[in-house]
Length: 345
Image (cartoon, rainbow, N blue to C red; front, side, top):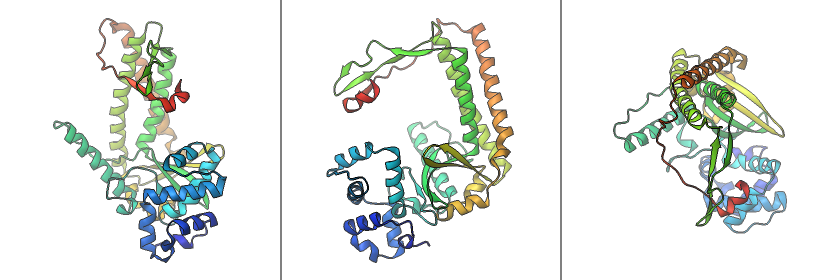
């Protein structure tokens, strides 16, 4: 086990803040400190953030609402600094790995040794929830569910944001992006204000934007529905195909985002997930690393297949579509709270 307190990544501001919030922390065993950090009590977290906001940025905040508002007002570089400062306390293992995701009550990152353990538990939780909601639901087999899970860690001493996904999900994202772009080209459209957009409703305002496709709104809806169904079916097929390959590979992609260090970690299959431990995340990923260029043929194939599907369905709809027969849709009323109105209206 890595004793996080001994890490050089513990900055003086973090040490001073923890000393004021929980001075007994430094007398605890490494196990106790670790359990505290990964499941930081909200009251302690608020107190730490209040102290760090003051020391790092000169921002005074007292209540929990004040702290939230102050964090909202931080610039991106300030957010990065705050996250990097607190990571040695909250993160796990060699890289101070922190999974920025929801955990079922009573669990934390310590509940899962490997990425596989976490992903399988999440899959079972989601499938059980669907089965309870819909008794006739048939649970999906597990071929790796990991998709756009956000994490933070230090990569070669550099504070880094990470995105964890299965290769299948990553491929389908790129294909869906191409399909959506093609639909925009085939059926140009724009969003216009509906009659109730911006209308006061209780403590908020109605969000009522409508699509104007020059009379082809029904055609656009139909093509988008077909795209959605295609993406669901193709993503399931890709997950099964890649899991059966058994490549046991991790593809590490450095994303070009100005002022930040960002990386994607793409797992080929469940065999790869089993090999990567949270305590040694980066080391294990690098041990399984394969060149990202290997995925180029798969990326091209999925993009081309998605484009071919959309073009074929568009041509079919142009021949067969009856605008008088429209799918019934449940109308949803969306209210934007008054505190956020300035951002949307």
